[in-house]
Length: 384
Ligand SMILES: Cc1cc2nc3c(=O)[nH]c(=O)nc-3n(C[C@H](O)[C@H](O)[C@H](O)COP(=O)(O)OP(=O)(O)OC[C@H]3O[C@@H](n4cnc5c(N)ncnc54)[C@H](O)[C@@H]3O)c2cc1C
Image (cartoon, rainbow, N blue to C red; front, side):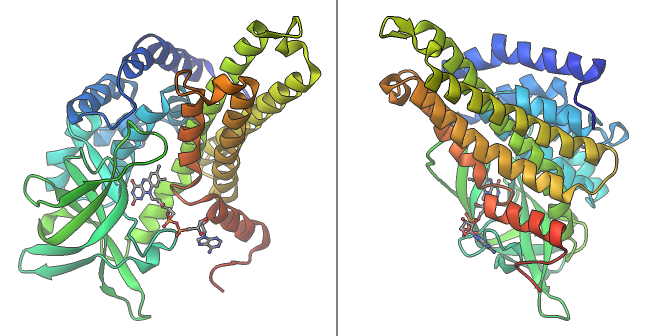
């Protein structure tokens, strides 16, 4: 297993880290802890587009940055968490579009999404369908040269600011009575839908929303791939995205550790820096070990994917471990800071709230454990 970055990866890491420290983070810190206006999101996406994160998974001949998964992971680890979450809207949409979109859709949207001129989100989850994608009830019915979409989506990242949404819908049932899940690209300007923003505990500058499609008319050319292929394409996109979410968690945990180390050196009690107490050192070493193990698990999964291995087990444990570890590390950071750690003024509590958001998307911790268990045992705990 490779534990070090090569020269190109190291350069990317240094560039992204310096860009975050000097430009992105100060810019974000000046904004309220609330959903950013669309123009601000767009401005930030244009700032990060040259790094390649928006189109990383698209080959260069298809208009993308054509990066390796390890390189993409480096960007997810180094950029601020809310920026990485916003960027994943375009990143995932482009990956999912690349698998089956028509020439018309490609020519009209790919360049704009890769450059950050256009913003995208993916609408999959529904009030009655979260972990179980097969139970979605949003319907797409064919009429002449277009589709009519009806249904409600929830927790849709970026939907409130997105120009386009890639929507998972049921196109009838197959011979075994299961939903034939397919994807439609819905352009807000030609196929209007209703948005209700959803307030969340963390990642509050990132947008999440409920989306309602009420007989929404979508051109037939906006069908991506064949109805029935959706489940496979979503699974493929989550496989490589899970370690990336794990690395967003690592970013937050790393920041919590850095702030805790600084505080433990500077804060004195009983006439000594609190970092000189063994119990505080225990906390800090535990935090550091959780950060290290999370990083290794995430990059192991991405490295295996780059090598063409399926890495289903590695991807699932990386996401489950790193996101749960970040919740622990950011909570321990609040402990190291005492009451100040709980004050909104200091902002350590924001790291905890942000980390808490990450154990749910792209499959909850329990779903990751079921995927890993199935890979270990060859037995599915969900379906026989
Ligand atoms: C930050 C964030 C971003 C998101 N972005 C998007 C997005 O862009 N687009 C989108 O469509 N959705 C998005 N989601 C939604 C996300 O994909 C779902 O929340 C997730 O799939 C879980 O579904 P649920 O919330 O309905 O929980 P449920 O599926 O109802 O699960 C509830 C609980 O039951 C457990 N559970 C469920 N089934 C099993 C089982 N078989 N065995 C054991 N335990 C089980 C779960 O682990 C969980 O603890 C996002 C969510 C978050 C928090």
